[in-house]
Image 1 (cartoon, helix red, strand yellow):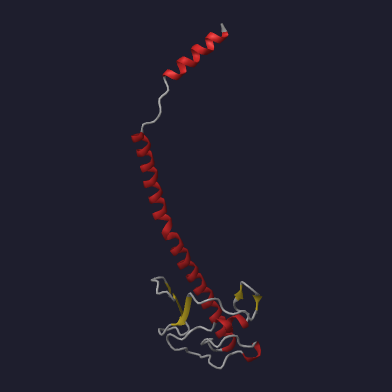
Image 2 (cartoon, helix red, strand yellow):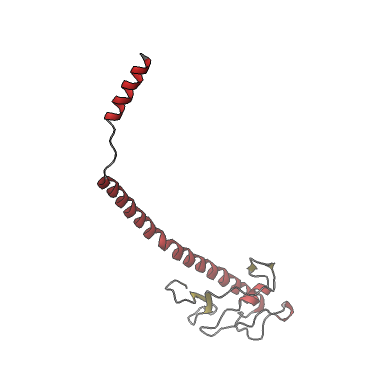
Amino acid sequence: MLLSILKDARRRSNRGQEGFTLVELLVVIAILGILAAIVLFNISGVNANAACNGMKTDGATIQGAADLYWNTYGVYPVGNAGVVPPATLPGAADAQTPAAGTTVNQAELLQANLLHSSTNGWNAPAPIPAMTEQFTYKASPPQGTVHGAFSSGSACTYN
């Protein structure tokens, strides 16, 4: 009796089962593909925005360090002279009113303990990382205003 009930139940359960058609599966796959494309399109601009915001933060940090350097030495750090020993600060190329387009000497700011090297700690003679960001002085007053841009020519700028 129990065996006949199980056979009957198995027979009834197989009658009502149907699978998805090929068209239904293709529609679902197409919808998932469209949603994935929309998500990827929206995420692609996030990296560029993050790099731009990072450069603007770096520019504000370098501007603050350059202003502190000017308050201490009466000049702005100018040029790419490399690492300057602390005993020789300010550097020979430093200027009270730097010319437009003159590069900010980040190595002098590092040696003056106004910038932090994330790789070797404070006041480290570590080389400046590959220059993807370039910081120069602007011509317009006030003198010593830092301008930042990417070396790749991106439209993102600081000041």
